[in-house]
Amino acid sequence: MFSLTSIPSATSVFSTYTTFAASAMLARTVINELRTLTNQLVPHQLQKELFARLGGLLWSNLSSHVTLTVDEYNGLSVNEIYQAADTYLGTRISTLNEQLKVSKAPRDNKISVSINKGEKIIDEFEGIHLVWEFVSVETQKTSYDYETCGQTTVTSEKKTFRLGFQKGFKEKVVRAYLPYVMERAKSINEENKRVKLYSLGGFGEYEGGPWSSIDFHHPSTFETLAMDEEVKKELVDDLDRFVKRKKFYERVGKAWKRGYLLYGPPGTGKSSLIAAMANYLKFNIYDLELTYLQSNSELRRLLVSTANRSIIVIEDVDCSVELEDRGCGGSRQNESQASLLTTRLSSKCLTLSGLLNFIDGLWSSCGDERIIVFTTNHKDKLDPALLRPGRMDKHIHMSYCTPCGFKTLAFNYLQIKNHPLFGEIEEMIKEVEVTPAEVAEELMRSDDADIALRGLVESLRRKNEKKFEEQVKANEEEKKEDDREQSMDIEKCQNKRVRRSKTKRVVRRRKCRL
Ligand SMILES: Nc1ncnc2c1ncn2[C@@H]1O[C@H](COP(=O)(O)OP(=O)(O)OP(=O)(O)O)[C@@H](O)[C@H]1O
Ligand SMILES: [Mg+2]
Image (cartoon, rainbow, N blue to C red; front, side):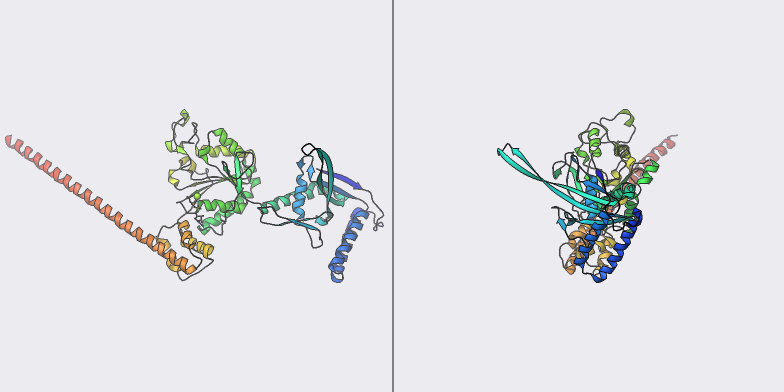
């Protein structure tokens, strides 16, 4: 991965010092002193020149130091240390670096800055002074091209980072500093990561496996989500705790997995909440359509090919599988029919709780964090086994819009925190069942807050009237039903009375005969 080159010591400006540590300390002190002094007296351009020369002088003259060479490629495979260094050093560029490169990938949001050939970056780690240098060597290869029947010249660039430090720290640099650089690079990459949406089927970039992906640009975040503030905070805390608990899950011997069941009427934000979770954690989303599945082995293959730090989503779980007891073994005969769920195309039984067990077994062996989310509009239709405690870790109810939710939406869509119509709207929202999606639709109708809010008041009023009419109708129906039952009762009573009087007459006649 990297090679070690010992550079022989040359005549040192610090030759009076016998230990490397002492000379390094002195060097640092001198540099710092000079830095303070020159900051006050010497112009910036001159400073750079001075430090470049002094740095070079010190490094080449220290009694002994080591240079680690980190090539971009290790044979045919990429060198992860090179990649990590490239990412990490992007954050260590100082005002003294002047030869910089900038780049931006087509779908990236950020411009990345890196050092150019020959530039040096100074770093400090637990008292070790380190100098990184970027080296790039262009090589030209001439070969015979059979297509053009002539010579072609291919230019390739061999990129390397050289890391110099005092020899005595070799162990510490390899064992502590480089892992630190890799760890930092990982979190920088996570911060800049683009979330991807993976689906089964044929859209997006096909990456060789069963999933194809597209960049996920859903704008939903926890700030824009209209939901009970307490539930929201609880969920964010739960996610934070979950991602930090690798050791805990290892200790208790459980798969590092968290399951959420989101339930509520259409348009209350279940899918938006999943998007907010993915954006918050920077986890990719895998949209698992159970109806596509042909067999359990296919399910296994799909789950195995999902990457770690991801959210597996099974939407509308009450509809994505058919309820059947066809093809199930004897042991399943006792289970309620509702708990037997088979995929449409499969003749094998697959219960959702079984699916969870299956996932547990699979993921406990790979040790990476996964989240699984089920959504449904009808919690009551779900497999009771799935609702048992311990199956899904959290059940989250996405409700109709609340006054508080309305304020969040008004801020999202109109950037307002108050308005004379707010009071009236909040009162109406308490009375009417309106989804956040419906409120959002009204608020989107105009950029003018007055117009948009008046439109919302109107639509809430219409909804209220409709609700009132429906209520009146329902009351009338109920009354009709009551009347019908009452008249049936009267009829029954009359018939009974007739029967009873007939019986009495018969009894009287019998008595008379006696
Ligand atoms: N709670 C919410 N907060 C913010 N916006 C919301 C919320 N609920 C719905 N919306 C808006 O309505 C649109 C539809 O919502 P979404 O798809 O998240 O609802 P859903 O509950 O998943 O519905 P379904 O059950 O039909 O899948 C969203 O794109 C968003 O603009
Ligand atoms: Mg949805």
